[in-house]
Length: 395
Image (cartoon, rainbow, N blue to C red; front, side):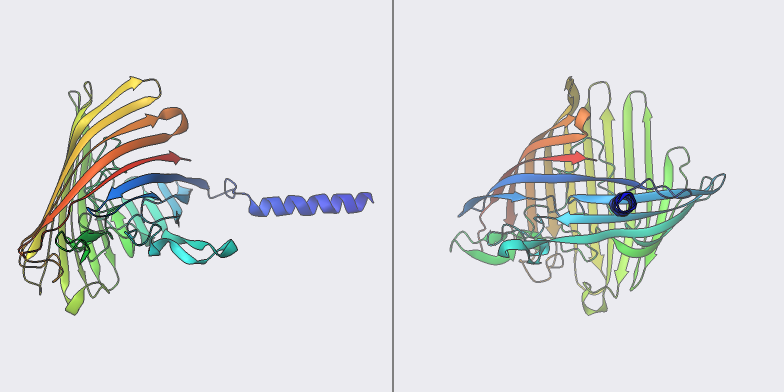
């Protein structure tokens, strides 16, 4: 009987070891991290109003990330990243007709309810040298992914950035008919490398990427991916005389990609900068993007600015107050590829507050946004507005 008891115990221990994230083996470390983020969103398209519970959208969704590193020799390292998203409701694909978004659905789950999607966002290995930089191979963020966004150090990056999260797939309502105009808000400034309106190379890709070491706050990156994408980026971050400053710029070209029509070549330039006066917490952040192609006539420009105050008024953590404005313009019908009329102009303005809770590695926010659309046609479009309240907790 004693032998059976011990055998059962050893079997149970083996099961637990097989299902528990450990620190890695004796040579390669393992760290599990990530966040869970959800929000409640009230929206008004000029005709209909509703309230949804939504996630943060693909690339910002709740996720877990496994990272590890081993020392090859002093100053030389090898490692890996495995990054998986759990999309309960995709804010990029929700609409008046769908509160979950087709990108979040994965068949039928228990009890006949919808199943929900997971996606592999990153999976790559790297070799890094303290003096020569880092070489990465696999599915990952390319050099120009989120370049302009990530310099935003205000603490409001997730709830307020220039990508069309929340409103991308909502139909624009024709004021005269009270029904859909046949266009969506995300039809403004089509992006061919992922992203919509802003961050027009924002989906991870299978690439080879190089990142230089940082010298005096400066670093450069470059990547290449199949069929075919290449890009370069430069970044700077520093602090002087009570001011914190960060800036980054990137350029990329995509050709032969499934989203690029007529074997065209899509080109995108983006730049972002952030300045904060640390003693007062006053900050300003701005971003600009320009996209064009070889075959389609015309181009598109996107401008985004956010300013506010980041101050520690409470022991819980910093409070961030901000206002934001975005403008996107497409000339000669390029940006919308025949969707909306020529000389289309999209505008967004909003305000919000973020409360950080340091003890829980958590942020809570409430924000309001107002969108309007104009173009060269005779159609009068209804404005779109929404309020969202949500939270993100890191682990």
